[in-house]
Amino acid sequence: MTKTERPAFYPFQNGEKAPLPFSPGEYDTRLMGLRSAMDATGAEVVVLTSMQNVAYYSGFLYCSFGRPYALVVTASDAVTISAGIDAGQPWRRCHGDAITYTDWARDNFWRAVASVTGQARAVGYEGDHLTLAQAERLKTFLSPARMVDIAPATMQQRMRKSPAEIDLIRAGAAVADVGGYAIRDAVRPGAREIDVAMAGRDAMELEIARRFPDAEYRDTWVWFQSGINTDGAHNPVTSRRLERGDILSLNTFPMISGYYTALERTLFVQEVDDASLAIWEANVAAHELGMSLLKPGASCAGVTHAINDFLAGCDLLQFRSFGYGHSFGVLSHYYGREAGLELREDIDTVLEPGMVISMEPMLTIPQGRPGAGGYREHDILIITEGGPENITGYPYGPGLNVVG
Image 1 (tube, one colour):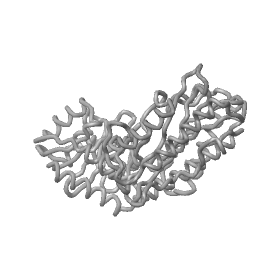
Image 2 (cartoon, one colour):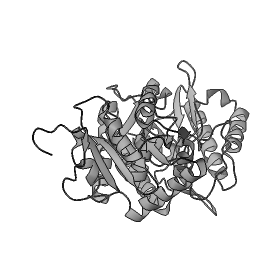
Image 3 (cartoon, one colour):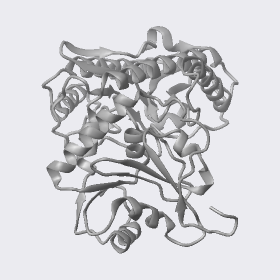
Image 4 (cartoon, one colour):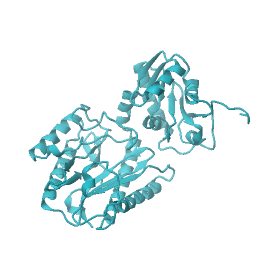
């Protein structure tokens, strides 16, 4: 490329390939699974656009910032398509080849994609991610003979973890425990939510760097809530100061190469009143019941109905906030979801060895009622032939979580 050329796209192999979260053989196996799905659906080429699928099949976790990214998979090739702002990093951090597109003309992204896909082929796409606007551009630039929604097949593949994935998730759960203990130690009357949250986040980031010296570090976070702020599972951190008797919600979320894990616990500052204790203990009992039900052959809906029946018997079902658990893997608070493996009434998926799922019942008692606040316990369980293996170590319940 000369100084005067302004190409639409070009290869930029800057530096050496960096260590990825998994071995080349792991990514080859994943791509083999995708190609099997392509054969089954008749897709000749696949254009993956979501963060979770690009990362799952290539190892590269992109930062979009309003720009499109893709992984194009054919019968023989896997090529990431990345914006020029990222220079050579996508090539260094991907399994396979990479093309950089420029912003010197509109739709250079699709010109780069088309250079790999060719024209008039059966194109697989992610129906749960591709926008209407980008779908129209796909049709314009690729002239597909037909379009095939490959997203359901990719989700099914991601739901079933490899041994290497399970090892990474197990490490993530241990890191979440480290954050939990750091938060427990930081709780005291007068401390702000933000101060406690930072203690947990810093402890986890240091632990991730210790365990994974070759990784990229980003996106690890904590939601630590107190008092009325505990009513929602995803309420942001504030500067509210803790008071004696406050209900607390501890939530640590380490992110390791796009893989999310979590620890969530109910705590109280120094003391817990009788009404709150009764609700807390009932939610702990629901949590323990739910964990005991996570076995091969159980359906997500069946587990959900059993916990519903238990909470109804306690006259607490009306305070349930959301589903009782979800899958783990390449997902985050702003991308990814394996919606086929959630503990809800409308999910009929049957649990299998190799799946990883949380148990996390939550009850929200409205302000003004005895025991007001949000109660949640959260453990991560690996489904094995012999039953569930709990990989969360931080203890739950009143015994060790009235703190400060």
